[in-house]
Image (tube, rainbow, N blue to C red; front, side, top):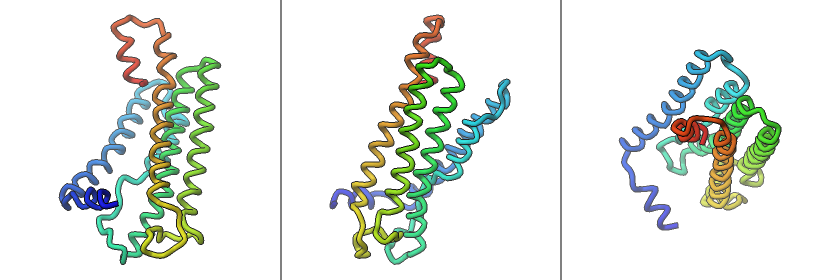
Length: 197
């Protein structure tokens, strides 16, 4: 606990503002470049692009700088961010999987991708409700000093973060076996693997 407080206080205002601005614009630029590339191609905008827009619009990249517990608005915003970030991550992961299924059409790959998609949907729904029902009765005031009946927020955050990384790992690894089986010139195979993995 003491280490957490020390880490949380080891920043200054300009660093936090700079990081917040950078991480607000980074996903916007990535989605714009993706849409631009899709518009240049023959297929145009399809279902996976629609999901990435939902993911971009519901994923938060920062929280207010005022973290004084007296600020009720901050607590309410943080509560909403926790819930909406989960939904945004679910849309983003689903977008990648639908994109993969549109490129790689083998039956085995589609089954694997659908299984991972089912895991993503289950992950999104479960952590949506876990964040919603952190306290009983439902309350945005989840910190222990408010005295509400809440689960351990740090444990919930770790569970969500670790499972998020594991699901992302599976999504990243999913197309690599298919790419490696393609009949490519040996010089271009590492490039394709790095694009999809």
